[in-house]
Image (cartoon, rainbow, N blue to C red; front, side, top):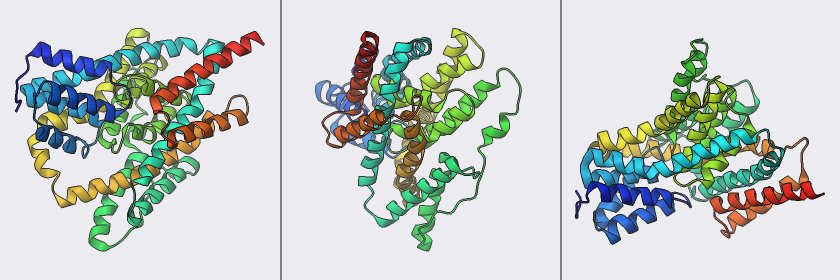
Length: 396
């Protein structure tokens, strides 16, 4: 447990502060936690921190949020884990809610619409750079084959009658790697299966959209391996198919998740908020939708960390579990790449394809690959560029 047991006010203050400063992605979040919890306050030792980090990186869900819960659990037990996780997420949650309402109102403002047109190719560049980063980590032939197989399955899902949702493809990748290890195979062959909520969507009850919302985000929370942007393939089809957002609007939500403190999976808050408005409710319904989506995507993390941490520490060493997780992670780049194809095309559309938007996407990709800018800062610069373009249009 904790080396120096913190008081409740200390625990709340530290993790709220980390949440407020939580820009720059999961690595930045984890560095802040190590500095505050291990080095400055010595609430846990370096070895305990390292073990917690290793566990969180093998579990589905946002690793930085899970690490906040692990550290809180180590310091003050189960309640401490809940408090530290909530405090870490709260600043980002509030920020995304505020930006979600501003975005909704801004849909009728011509100037803001122009800003969002400029931001979309920037976000597309962020997604493709994420794919490239993941692919560079895939050094084994079987990993590359798995990524290609999942990408092909995802493209068939996008552009053919076959129904191959990203969640199914990633699960199949995990199973295929277990089969590969025992049978020597590599190829991933799948039949088309419809997601269960498509059938449930026939229910006509006015409140049933909340069940659909919870189902979509619960599934996503169970399959977020390898980084927060994995939510893109996991959510894109369902969010668009259920009529909550268009493809371009979903990209706006990813942008809001990027520029807000905390994990990018807080895009779930944006989607839930907009789904509430689409369902015909007012601000209260939208807020309920935002909270349901957020709670659903984080529920698996809470269950894994707080209900089964000691068991998970043993299970993660099992060779079969490691093979399954390795297969899922190998398939992640393919799933994200397949989802990025239609989203990229959407990002390059205004009233017609714009060469300038394509050039902007290529420039942003180069800046990210050269590591001259981090994704969140690049998205903020995209917003600034969009404002400049809007002002110039007004002058001219």
